[in-house]
Image 1 (spheres, one colour):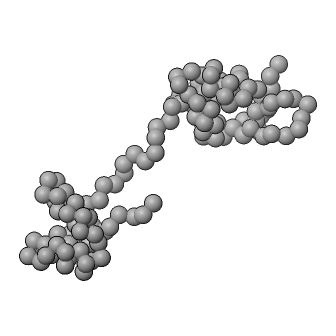
Image 2 (tube, rainbow, N blue to C red):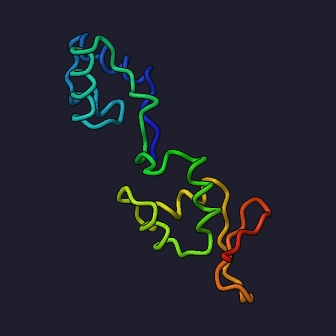
Image 3 (tube, rainbow, N blue to C red):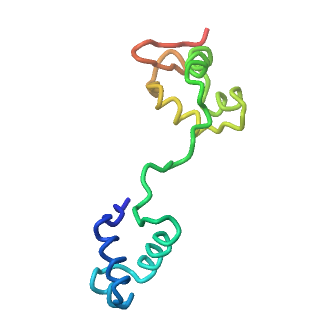
Length: 130
């Protein structure tokens, strides 16, 4: 993801426009787009500053948030496929949500030829179906 323009560059661009220089000349001189300059000026007018937005939510929220309950669920249903686990969990959770949550709690689903059909390994402990 590209980094935002520095606050110093933003203030220099706005100061140049306020001194009376043309927006087109300022945007060419600082190698920024005219639209970017207009957005900075609009933000300066409405908010009083033109700083970049920081610390905003990136990505989506997890559908599974109760990690203790999910760990217990994995111990109980570790022999099932991720699709089956998603159906059992409910709450419109998909197989991909289960996969992401398993990765987050450190569960590895190794696919090795074994006597047991499915096996879940959690931090070195093995959970099998009875």
